[in-house]
Image: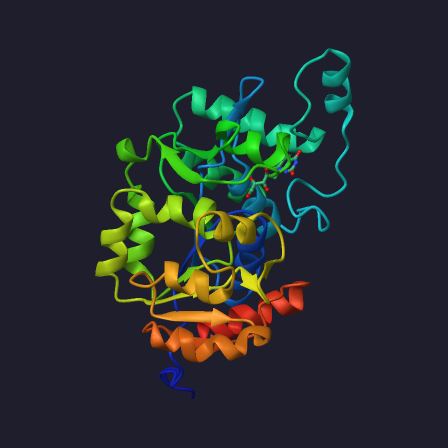
Length: 319
Ligand code: FO1
């Protein structure tokens, strides 16, 4: 007769809260999603890039995380859906309607469903739960707040809305300052604050520190929840060898007066995290990171494919 199962000598799997922007964060989220048991990952996601287009509420970072975790993201673009078609976009062009922001036919379904649910009074958190369930995603994809926060960039061309700067003008403007309109009226949602409270591990994804991670950290309530959290806290550098793999993080470090290196990023995160992950190309910066009071960890951070994402996630989970 077999008795009760032996208590496992292994440590229980950690609960993880990942703070994420779009593509880079979503790729790490995918690794963590596969490395952790179902339900152990919450992705606290930037909504500063959200905007309204043609009456629809578009949430690029939330959708990038959703599609990536569902295994449906376009692998080359990183955003939007794979096997996408663009008939609606073509029709919009013919009508002279805005077509600079490319909404694919399948992707449109997400914006329609979300906008309708929001108009009925469902919360954005609730909508993302519904979408995640519909696409079979076991992680929680949590908007950083319910209130509208809009990232704006100060440039010589004036104050630009985020997607105007990022997509319409192709990130060509030198960024002289970053604002998060509405952040003062926002509150970290109950779900976001609980995820931070319950986490054993908090990870700042290799997302843009100024426009993806900073808005989440600045949502009122988040700083305190992080300070009170007993979790290990670490950040993964989005800069390696002095360059960002994608997006304007390196250009922003320069134009906002910071060193364009992983060390420049580490300095931004002093007081927020205890560990800082550098790519092996930046291993020589490890002693300088340690001098900042952060524990440097040198790990391959280029997440070219699912095996690299999983390997990085497993290494992060392991203290
Ligand atoms: N990025 C682009 O560079 N061009 C686009 O036309 C575009 C459309 C788009 C549609 C839906 C979506 O969820 C994301 C989309 N993105 C597009 C990505 C998005 O603008 C950025 O990657 C993020 O806001 C930055 O994290």
